[in-house]
Image 1 (cartoon, rainbow, N blue to C red):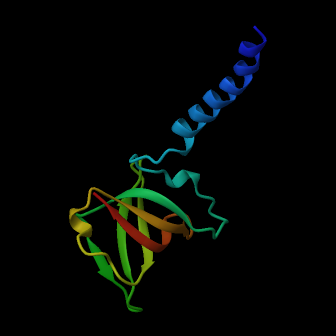
Image 2 (image 1 turned 45 degrees about the vertical axis):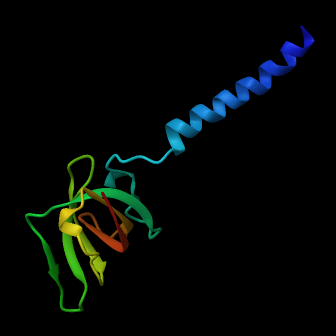
Length: 116
């Protein structure tokens, strides 16, 4: 009986850690939300979004690109600051854009990774 009691607590700890990992830390293919970004923070965070193909990407005077993306809440956001666009961006299902909010309606990106 004492041996079973010694196994109950470690078993519960392992179960709790597994549930936390698979429900919170496990990678996901779901679109992110711009609502979780702090507009007063310049910390670069990744977010999974979809490219708005209808609006395309435009090149600015300084040589960077501007384009629009949609998050999981269907909020459309202007993405700025990317110098080079990855090939195949029009055909990708989603992408991971790393950056921070720049004002209320713009996202300053530092990197893009396509997801298929």
